[in-house]
Length: 98
Image 1 (tube, one colour):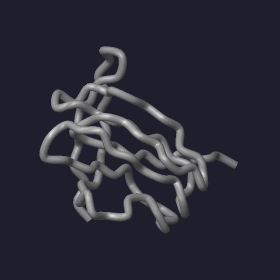
Image 2 (cartoon, helix red, strand yellow):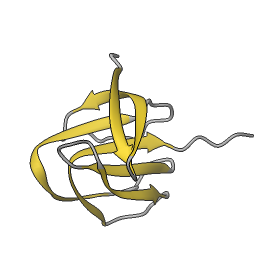
Image 3 (cartoon, helix red, strand yellow):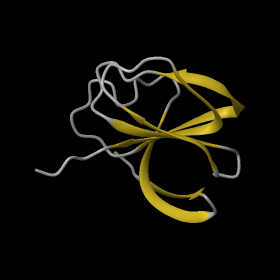
């Protein structure tokens, strides 16, 4: 598994994160117990919908072509019909500390 470091922006603040790039045909975090953040790339910016079925809670961050956040959602288990607009989607697992 190759992790790439990307930079993205939320409210003008630069963030850096290591991600695994995956195909848009991937199931994303679905059925994964442990996963690094996942980055999906589309050919162009557009609206698309994701689901939280069979997923642990995660943060979904839609990014435009300049890697600026356009929408951020905390996705809970069994949540469906979550839409956003972007060229990229970043799925970041939410870790719970015990």
